[in-house]
Length: 328
Image 1: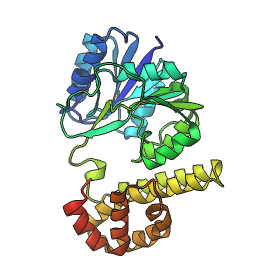
Image 2: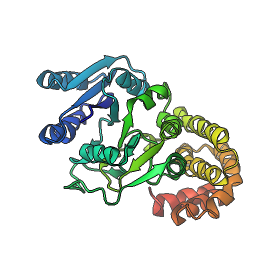
Image 3: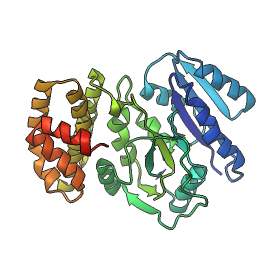
């Protein structure tokens, strides 16, 4: 079996870091089909004792490597993890999330069956660490192989391929060639296109084997912070990628436009919480230009069309209805 390194960046994660070991490393140790792996923990300048907890665990298991660096953000921490990886295949895990027991075996099986450059399992949001595993036995009957163009379009719609690096098994050379932007948030959105575009094909599993633990205070749940505007910088990258590679592809342009608007509503939500009337007016004007790509697009679900329509009609009404009836 080809060696795999699992990279885990963390910052002040003492409340969650044990989940990395209890819900991930322990599974790998018990799974006799997965023998050649290593977990690389990158301590991004934590001020709590999470770094010490990881050091203690590394002393007990040689397959755990801990790297301590000054705080530089998640993108930089991931890049440092990649630089320290010795395997040709890598995975990423956020410190407060977890993979199901069969996730690594499943991704390896996907890669091997399709001889893919990337294998991916879908990500599902959870609010608890006590969610029952959805898969007890690896089964690839519903798996599929996508070419890069189809995968990129699906990525923009946020369906079976996401922009987050988690839930994926990568060829290391892909992430080495296209490192994560540093010093920004939405670094994954800014570079995911290039990662997928570097693949000849991508194997996709239909099981939700990566559990994203959403907590109060995460980027998507926060009040306005100037850093949230990094979203628009990330989308500028994607607009330039599409213009470079698919200048005459109307479907791809429609897909990236819908991503810009629908994900941009998260920024709008933060603006609403901070009563940023002028900024909301400008954003409403900008989003209104894309009404055909949203309202006449069969790929956009009805709920999102309603959200968009309400915001264009009235940010105030949108906020009232969203808060009461259309919560994410």
